[in-house]
Image 1: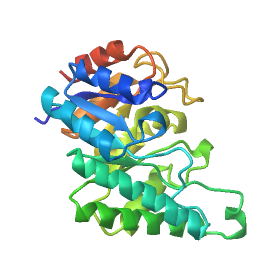
Image 2 (image 1 turned 90 degrees about the vertical axis):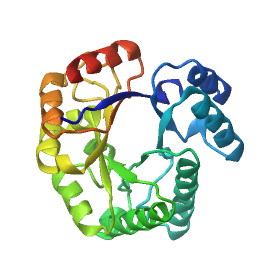
Image 3 (image 1 turned 90 degrees about the horizontal axis):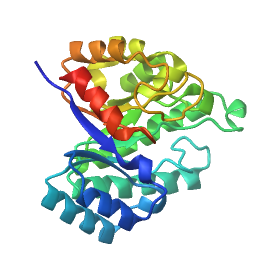
Image 4 (image 1 turned 120 degrees about the vertical axis):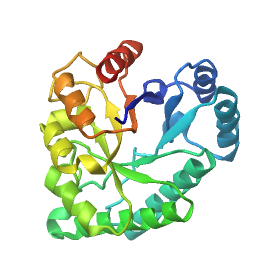
Length: 260
C-alpha cells in the first residue's frame, strides 16, 4: 500500500528574512519542505543557488508555492495577465532548478469587471493555466492548482469547477487539496471522492469553518480522522505539508500518527 509523506510548508516564517529561512532549513530534520516564492522569500538566481546548496547538504526534497499575492491569472487586463504569466514562468524556472516535485499555483480571481463580461474570466483562467502547463512541461515541472475558498472570489473553488477545469485543459494538471480551504467550503470529502485520483499534493491546516486562519491540526473543525481514511483509500503517496502558522511540530506529529 502506498504511504503519504509528511512535510512542512515554510509559509509560517514568510514574515522573516530570507537569511532566517536559510538558517531554519540548515537545521531542519524534515526531508520534505515546501518553499514559498513570494514576499521576502521571493526567488532569484542567487537565492536559488543558496537553496540548492542547502538542499544538497541536507538531502531535502522541495516543492514550491508560486507567487500568489497580487497575482490573478484571469485578470481582464491583457498587460497585467502577461505580467502575471511571466512572474509564474520565473517560478517554473526556479522549480526546475530546485528539482521540485510540484509547483503549486492559485486559480484566477473574479474582479468587479466580471459582471460586465460573463464567462470571460473563466476563459482567461483556462487559457492561462494552459500556457503555464506548456511552459512547465517544457522543463519537466508538474503544475498543480490549489482549491481556494469561494468567499475570496476565486473562479475555481467547487468540485464541479475543478472537474470542468481538468476537462478543459490539455495536459497533466494536478490538484492540490488544501484541507483548510475545503473545510471552509464544506467540500473536503466530495473532492476526495470525486477527484481523488487528481490529487497530487496536500496542504494541511485547520480553521473554524469560516476563516482561513491556518490553525494547527486539531485546533479547528476539520474531521481529520475522516480525511485520513479518505486519503488512505486513494493509496496517496504524495506529500502532505503542514501549512499551519502555529503548533507546527504538534501538527506534524498528529498527521504522522494518522498515516503510520
